[in-house]
Amino acid sequence: MTFLAAEPVVLGLSPFWFLLLISIALSVFVSLVYKFMTDQTLMKELKKDLKKYQAGMKDAKDDTAKVSELSKKAMSANMKYMKQTMRPMLITMLPFMLIFWWLRKIFGEVIVVPLSFWPGHLGWVGTYIIFSMIFTTLFRKLLKVS
Image 1: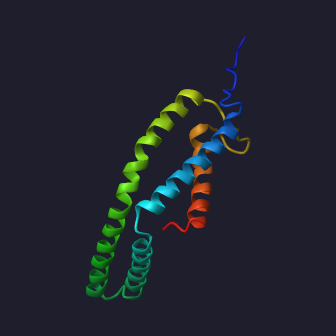
Image 2: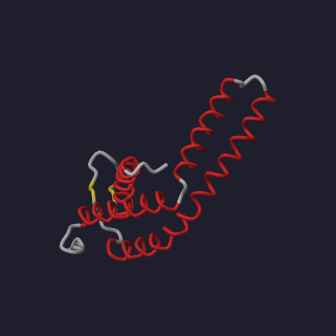
Image 3: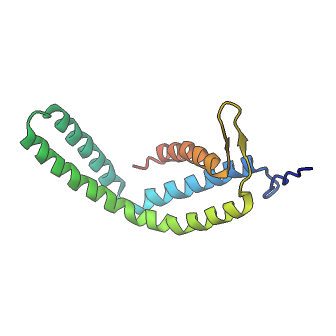
């Protein structure tokens, strides 16, 4: 006789609904941290410059000197962009590590979304990742975060 472990209930919610809510909360948190901890004007400018350099490299693919020059400029802009994102990443890292440790303790190997069309199922990590991608994109657009 096989016994299946009961699905954990957190705050009265099933794993699916709890992960949906935690994904929304963490996506809002990350979006707000990035919005207020980075220079949004500079970030937008750097993104625009990177697109311009990439287009220039594509157009000048036969001129190696020009491609090299644009590549150096793109690398410089990319380094400035990465420096801007470093502080918010460090601020969000510890809370995420603690929350993910807690979620692993609660949900472990629980199947959150059974998939009949795929040779596996979504556990808490896969479910969180999908929700997180959706909500982070949504909140970044709503808050105009670069």
